[in-house]
Image 1 (cartoon, helix red, strand yellow):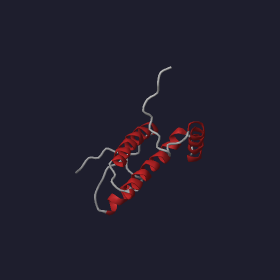
Image 2 (cartoon, rainbow, N blue to C red):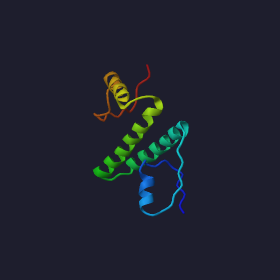
Image 3 (cartoon, one colour):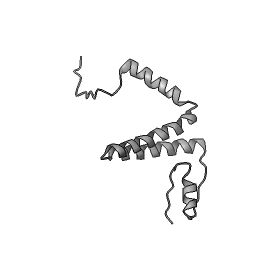
Image 4 (cartoon, rainbow, N blue to C red):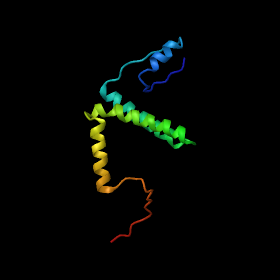
Length: 108
């Protein structure tokens, strides 16, 4: 029986059950949940880096976004709160849309 020891999507136990397989799970406390979200984010970002086409890239970005949604309540925040912070930072420092790659800055 494979051992996974990782955060999975909420409906995975039902999927496994429908397949007729047995499984073991437990519900993480808030601290454990955040730790596992961070691990899963790292995994999903790596998978995004390895994508070779637009559809796979969008699938991985959707997974990353889902993990962000899961992390927000742990920080007592909503997606709207996050979006306000994102917009504020973009207004002050810009976004990443133009693809500017900084090479060096001369010391004064």
